[in-house]
Image 1 (spheres, one colour):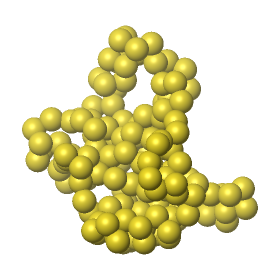
Image 2 (cartoon, rainbow, N blue to C red; image 1 turned 120 degrees about the vertical axis):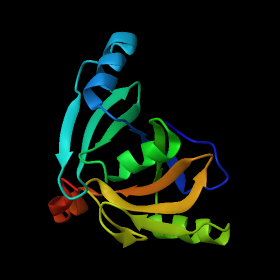
Image 3 (cartoon, helix red, strand yellow; image 1 turned 90 degrees about the vertical axis):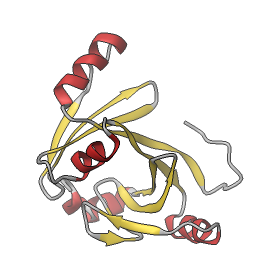
Amino acid sequence: MMIDTKDSNIVGIKHMAFAVENIETVLRSYKNFLGVSKSIQIMDMPKSRTRVAVFEIGNIEYQLCQSQDSDGRFSKWIKERGQGGLHHICYIVKNLDAALDNQKKNGAKLRECQACKVIGNHPHPEGFIAFLDNEVEGVEIELMQIYTTEELEKYSAYKGI
């Protein structure tokens, strides 16, 4: 999905992640109401104690994120708000360092990636990422520079975060 923005470094949406209490229950609703059934991938992420279901509707990737314990990131988020919902949107950028510089100039702050315990630009399973500490109406912002083929091989150890 292309985005029309004055920041030409932002080129699209990678995914939208939803905090859920029970992946199976929410997936059943997506299957019943929207016909989602093909290519649903469910992964356990041991380092972040999270279970994630990934699927696409159109050209948008959806992630349903469930904490594996009550102290997990998504469990806490749900408790704070009283219900699950849209947790974050991940925007694709051409150059993450340039995007972060631009965001900082506009007053954004960086926050720690709760899976990796790193602030700022760092490797993740699909690309270099960073989270902004500034929420937009309760929705977190993630920026990702997707790996090149060579980088994908180099950073393959980050699968399962």
